[in-house]
Length: 195
Image (cartoon, rainbow, N blue to C red):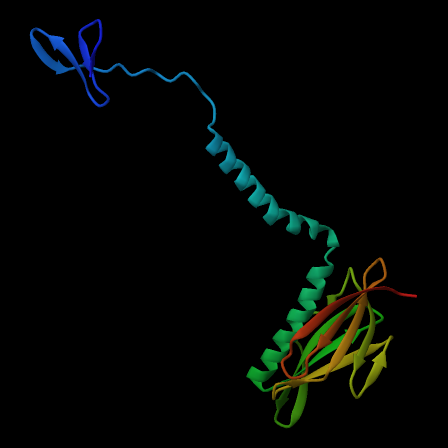
């Protein structure tokens, strides 16, 4: 403890003053902090958050300029899986028809009612733009580069094994392989150019 010239006793924990013959706690006057700005910890947190957001958003922005190619491939793979599941659930045969000349695909449902097969459009014809349909190979039917080719999807959980080759505007080949037992689609980017 120490005594200041004004008669205030100070210790490391409490301050006392001598008032009217008594020792009483002294009022502390707090200094108003005039320094404004950010602490080092605040700046580090902000920089860490900005770095985290950039690591999340940059890969998304890098793939943004693919011109819809990935979206087209995912839509095609999703259509195959949807038809496979629908065929298994409804016990109706489905067809996925590719028109190589028009660069499009159309899905059909074959309903068997009273011994006659009725072909119903399952959705509408969809363009495969910005990709170009180059080749469809169906095991047992052959390889096609022109005209229409239908891939059958059967109600017992099986479809014709198929490989589709598409090309982007730079000539890079994209290959889709349909798994006959699961209806899943494997997408490969071959990075080779068309001749």
